[in-house]
Length: 360
Image (cartoon, rainbow, N blue to C red; front, side):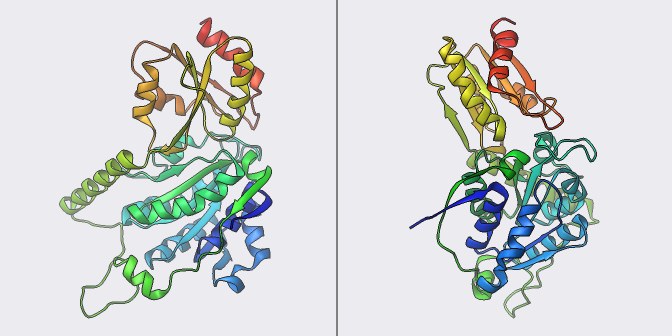
């Protein structure tokens, strides 16, 4: 029996973390995601399941605490907003290099720099292209509702441990702060030490007589070995791209034009579809749920069937690059974006479709 609650998106992430058996949260407050840490502090999950909640002295400290917990095979996570995630990039790269599973939440605000506390989607490049150094990827999930904020916590942990790779929930200030009904599953117990030894034989849980020491590191000064390691990582990313693409299609069957949008922008586009179809314009929505892996094959197939694609983003235009790389043919592909924390209206989206795609 699922339990129904009315919650903010940020609070839903915290409640879901407690319920999926998260071992530890290490974070630092920053608007618009501070409720994640605040909710966990109030709920005191240490008393419920033994989950550790700690406000670190900085984002740098929190990501390195996550590194340490993940190295022990624990289900650990952190959260922040754009500038804080920038500070974590070195640690995220280290975890990708050391193949450590973890969950990172980015409730995006406008930038660059300190920018504004209002919602944005301008961290797409940072999340999907590897915002730190080296040839690496993290798995990126883009929720568009408070329910998905909750659901993607368990999914994120599952994917992270399946591929021994960091996973990120890339949200924004609007979804983090809005309130909706959310359904939760019953509490799952944290893994026991015996289960951790069985499920994560690579973890640093103490040497046993039947194996060599487990050493967790992203450092190898031998270039030949380092290249072999990188080739192994690239093969893993190809496997993720083949098996873990997630997306949603709305009103695409008869569509002559397509909106491509994720997160808050996809919610705006759903109303824009209604307005456009009332005017006789057959338009649908393609919503990437995984931003990495990006749904390349699906965009390619859609591009063969429609006259034009409008990428709707709360940014200067980042996801549109992946759309253009995936699309085939000579169709019109344009971008419509708002910046600085401003959210576009459905009417504006339809107007831009008419001007840039249909009449362009």
